[in-house]
Length: 259
Ligand SMILES: [Fe+2]
Ligand SMILES: [Fe+2]
Image 1 (cartoon, helix red, strand yellow):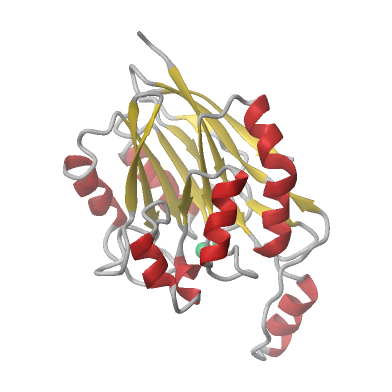
Image 2: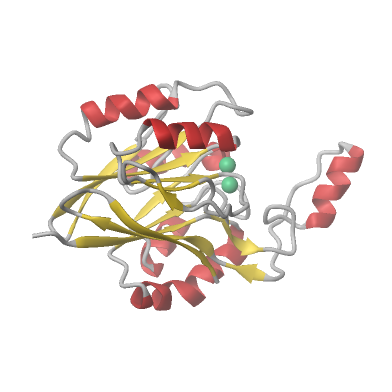
């Protein structure tokens, strides 16, 4: 019998102000939207860069099932140990020979869900091909998963759209992260994959992509090396909810969240 799984995905969580958004809003949001499975991008949760063991526990306590990441996952020196120890903490799957894994499998309402984290190559460091990596995972490690959800952490809108169309109908949901700017293009692609180019972020919006804007401007205008600090002004939580049919694997609805 056809059933649905309601998924919540949150954009990059920026430092303590971002984590406070989860404390304040996540529980009510999950109840209101009848969420079965929650994924958040945690690459900026430790004061803007990386993640700690304490933060992994906090994400879990606040109601996050899987933490994805991206280029900033390596900011803390214990990242390899954390990635090896916590299989719900993902790094991009197309990093060559890195610690940890780029996917995990969870059972929700009796349905096997594969979560994949990938990173882009346009305007970013050279890594393995995200298209080939996802294809390989679908043919091998994730071949028995009913539903596959992908967080594609990438700078380029074009690269995200290309991956979305290439895997349309082969995965249930593809969301972009990394730019910290939510896009207004949430849609269901022709063959049934739910898609948005970027989820946005959780943190201070009186900022440059979550960081105190005065510091970013000073760095941009002087080229001096100045440590960034997360903004705590005008805080919001952004992401999407998606309704996935467990029989057809098709995304039936995708909705932007901006609280
Ligand atoms: Fe980020
Ligand atoms: Fe990033």
